[in-house]
Length: 380
Image 1: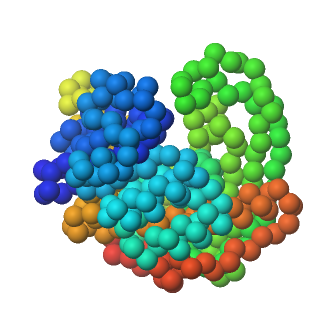
Image 2: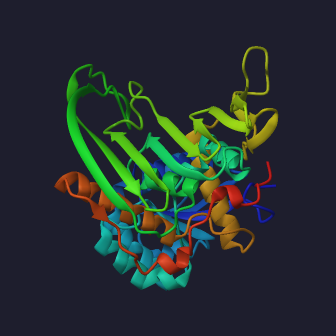
């Protein structure tokens, strides 16, 4: 059975042939039992033959031809400005859409997009960071109430809307106004790896770091700390601190108060097959805490990076949603809120002034905030 459910592999069409589209095409080629690309839309004639030769799907030049291949949903991998034009066109044609992050380049674009398609309920956004196995395991620790109600999250691993998605996931913040203050500084840092791999450059270059404090005024908020290139740079650490009322998660370390005089410390353990004499193949098996499984790899036995697992998880969950067999994986309203807060971080950093986010039209779709620790645990 496919991870997408009993309906077989997730059938989706792609718009674009850039870096992100290439990643999705490679994933589908490696996971044919889970993912199937019906067609690729590209208005670049030079890319058509290359895409079909390397990956198999036909290349079309318009949405009519794309939808004629009967995908369950369409993934847009275009930049935000182009995506904001494509998404309404696809929704008007009756398609379910998984839009690239962020769904709009700025707040004005988010508002226009919401006005056009928000009420349709047909748009999800490809926010993968909460589905990263390590983050999914940490979220499960919070859901099980191990560290109590979470008030503060410190994210130093990824940029802007992605980091905000993690802060909101761990704290249960929805559309509450946030007061944002931020500062930046520039330092000479090396960046030996980019999207294309090792660059061969050992020199240092001016690199900007941004630190921002997000405050909801109700005891919840977060610290955003990001240095340009940090996501891929092997010289820069990636850190996550989740501070609960009775304990704390620091990366994979979990410490909590279990009675009036006892503090217990544990580690989230990653079981990886294929090590030493294990002949099952090199793959993530599961992550556990004190012998209890927090998260299982939904693609067991596949040689996937954590990023690939997260992206494939979003795709299969989107297929289940499109079939009416699962919840919405990441609705447009949630992604719009992430980008709204990200824009406030950018503005606060640029101006040196505090910025407070406004309550936008999509707030009603998000509902009130809640405490993840109060949610029932998800099945391990």
